[in-house]
Length: 227
Ligand code: ATP
Picture 1: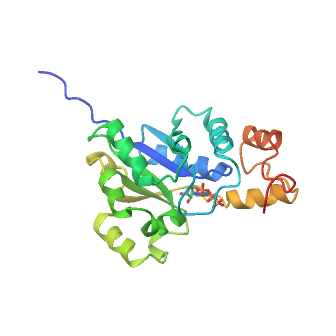
Picture 2: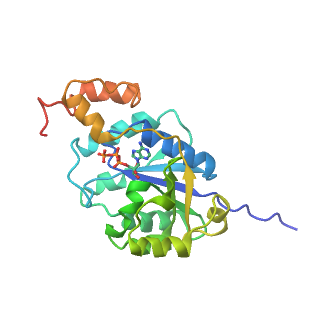
């Protein structure tokens, strides 16, 4: 009798502008990896995100900052395809590509903060995302998803698809919505950009290696960048 082939472990996908990457992103990815039983988390910096204003730092800088931030963690990997595409990057396109790469059986898990999840109905072909991946929403303790004002179309998807993690993620390759707990960290890239622009210190909000890179390349300072 031959031994059964082990089920492939889920792969997490964390997209964002990472302008710049900070400890909020890193903690989100680490909590997801641990609680959701992910094989690894794939970081996918956006090139030109279609849902929002152009990032302040160039794509190559944002990519390099993520590379520095995740370098020490063997459970994290970098995907530069959206950056290299040099055109508007849609999450659905990335998921189609990753599904083709990983095969039909591997569970893929799109990781989102609650704010990103609430904006999902504005994304290109958003309902099709569930054909390619599960969606895991980072639930800050004290701010449960249940109390958030959900758009009606999203609430309907939640009723249909919400499952308990991590089991649901391993029993199918895509289609479920689950939540997971993260350490609440009130850090945002926009606040960090503003601090740097006004000469305030963003130290301890992001890795030292990323801060060194920002300083070496004079990113986000008022003298070199627009508002
Ligand atoms: P900005 O302030 O420019 O809007 P951001 O800090 O929200 O940027 P993004 O690159 O837009 O960073 O976020 C990527 C993902 O990380 C999103 O799903 C977002 O919800 C999540 N995220 C960002 N900051 C945090 C945080 N402090 N805690 C939990 N999740 C976060």
